[in-house]
Image (tube, rainbow, N blue to C red; front, side, top):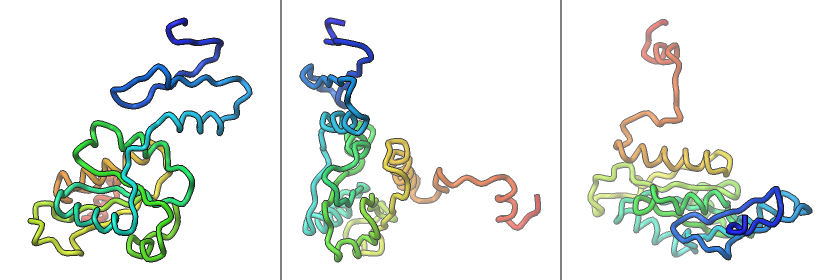
Amino acid sequence: METLHIKSFPALIVFPVGKEKKLNNRLHLPKFKALPEILHDISDLIPDKTDSLSQTDAQYYISDLVRSKKPTFILFYDSQDISMSYRVIAQLSKYQGKMRFAKFKNPSQETKAMFQISRLPTLVALFLQDPKKEPEEIKNEDVKVAHFSGKFNSNELSRFIDAVYFLLLFDNALVPPWRRYSRRNECQEAGHRS
């Protein structure tokens, strides 16, 4: 217990994501703290490694998407902080080098219209319909937009991000993993009776 610096039980020790684990990042939670305060304290320990965008940066991200062919996820928000789950997911090694993560605070009405945003926060995925095309062949209609409609927790965010990556990995040819059919529905769609 001395090594972990636990003073009383129950105790919660939070270590940041990644290779660097610093002892001074310990979090001591007294009994009188409420859950929202605890979550805020934990959230403060997690760095934000997403790119901050402005109107001009958003245009750059789209043109860079065409050049790099990497899916780009942009969180549009109007609150003080962004989702802790989104910040953690953006740091996971399985996504490093394969996709880009950004945030855009207080988007203008023009930006909301451009990305078809009706409410905040909204997570948008930008990706190429056909990543095999050469950059000079890509037109505006080749850049696709997908909106995340789930809860901002790590499981649902990961499923959405993985689904976008899965579709690109297999050239958009397969049915998305979240779309499941019963045997009866498959038969009906094929024009057969079960």
